[in-house]
Length: 168
Image (tube, rainbow, N blue to C red; front, top):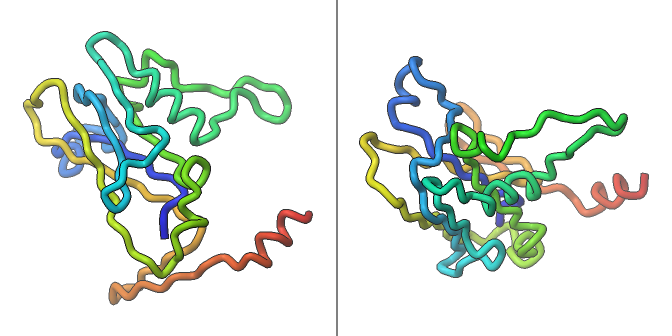
C-alpha cells in the first residue's frame, strides 16, 4: 500500500551512534535536488525539490514541508503558533515531505496487497566530510504491528468506520 506521507531527513552518521550530537538535527548538507519514484515512475507533484543552499534558495522544500503537513499559522483561538523560520530551515529543519494521497491518489490506485518499490534519488552540490544517513519516514493511515518475534500484522481501516466518523 502506498503511504499517505513520505518525509525524508538527512543526519550525520555519528549523530546516531554518539550522544554528543542531536539525532534530530536534519541539516541541508548541500543537497541540490531530491525526487521520489514509485516503481520507477517519478511522482508527478512535486516532481522533485531543487535547492541551492549556498544562495539560500530552498523555498520548494520549505513550502512543501509547511503545506503538505498542513502546519497552521494559528490555532482555533487565533493565537499565533511558532513556525520554523525560512532562515532556519537549512540549519536543522531540512525535511522533505510528499503528501502522496493528496497529490497522487496513490492510496486509491494501489491495493493494499500489492508491493511496490519506492526510491529516493538525490544529488549533492558538494562532497561531505562525514558519512550521512538518510532517514525515510512513511506514514500510513492503517496500522502495522510488529511483535517480539518480528511477525508483522496489518490492520486496515474499514470504509464504514471512516464514513461514520465523517458523518459526525
